[in-house]
Image 1: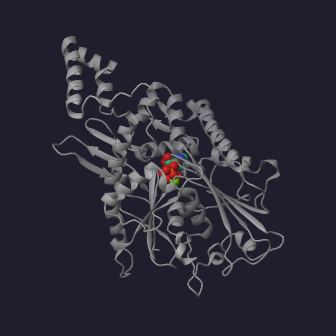
Image 2: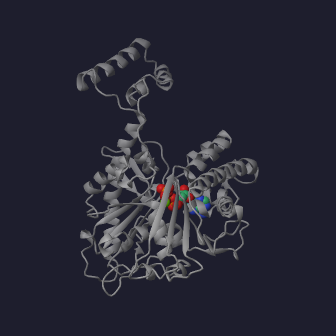
Length: 478
Ligand SMILES: Nc1ncnc2c1ncn2[C@@H]1O[C@H](COP(=O)(O)OP(=O)(O)OP(=O)(O)O)[C@@H](O)[C@H]1O
Ligand SMILES: [Mg+2]
């Protein structure tokens, strides 16, 4: 049990951190240095290799700089951490060094620098012999994926090490509390990629655990990892509130009293069952969570406790995939222009092109993702929305009926009108109804304000961090 806890929502695009500083304090989002404008910190690491020693930068500073000329900018390393290295299917994968030495690009470079063919062959032999000497002839060849995963683990260590300083610094600016923040344990929200399995068993969590430990974060003693879908659902539905009864037990009724769920918890015979369907469209994964409650019409607040049944699933479909298809659909010049943008400017492009339908101005190229690319953008956006809708339908088809339902859309991807509106329409097909639909407010899009309750930014983007810090996950209070 932990009386207080940090929760890191380690997002592939943005990391968000919440703190619950007492059992019954509201969980709150921390505004850390490294997040220039808000509570979301770009999950970006920059390595500057131009000097004798590599120099590292993180967060907004890293996101604001372009790669190239000895500067590497790493984004998306969460995905590499959670992508299992592909098993060798008969042919052993090439080690990265062999892949380089045998590549057409390397041969072309050798020609350009007038290195003769015999020397190139000798270099290849030399590399092969050196490996045999170091590792022995049977030494395992490392696949490109395994190499990327190992690199992602190193980046995660550096990132969490930096993040810890930012978090403790942000805590030191909080009104005096007398708390020793450095002793507060941490919990991390991670995708639920393997159906039915404990999220902590994923090999990516083993790497995360090591990275966090090396970076000095004390892990929560019983539950260091929670799943993103569930923590997001809890964060949004409790509105970050934590309540105990006088006897010191969790007061689920009070915690979930901010929405229609309370009607069911109070024992309304007309509404004996309730479901919240929460869909978070992130950069790497889309997370689905169904929180189901059955009271049979009886009061289920403090004493009896509510029987929550949670079904959840993360699928590796996210805005990063949309980015890839958009790049693919543009002209080579526009693609190159996008590739050279600092991470932060790329995110500006995402907002302009996906959400506002305007595109970004590029010198000499007109606009990118705007009017001239309308057809390409339309087809990328609708394909992406269709993939998410298909996943949503698959997830929903396994759920039974509920008397009262609430739909909650979160994640940066839910701010894209095509995505948000497609999800609202699809989940309401076949006569399915929701007493309330919560989603980010949009300037464009057809779902009118009358239909949708505006979900503010703390809960659209920070739900997983807030929910992960909830006492809902402290089993000792039950
Ligand atoms: N208004 C917007 N329009 C378009 N894209 C947006 C908007 N706001 C955020 N995004 C993008 O949506 C993506 C998802 O953001 P989010 O913070 O939900 O991802 P994440 O939590 O880091 O990812 P994951 O949970 O999959 O690891 C990011 O690529 C972000 O840049
Ligand atoms: Mg996320």
